[in-house]
Length: 133
Image 1 (tube, rainbow, N blue to C red):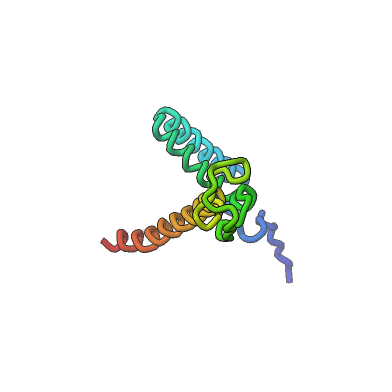
Image 2: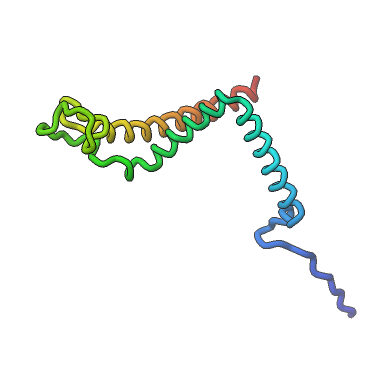
């Protein structure tokens, strides 16, 4: 009986045959091309650029909230209530002695979380409804 030998086929690990080097290079090249086009269009419209910068600032503040907030936003300190802006309290304190700067920063984080959840729920509910119509 004769043995039949089958030449080995080139196979990438995890069954990722579609992701060969030329294919990945083309996909990444296209991604960077689209990103550059979007950035140039954004830069042409000054109002859109300003809006994007503001959104990025809010996102950065929300991500860095634990490092930027100097005081606990809910801790009350009656000795320091109704103070004006100073180096100790950038925005001052409220009638319960809470630092307003810390409350604004932690509020930005909550706002970002709520907005991301709202968009996610809207997409989750809206896309299937749009597909069925």
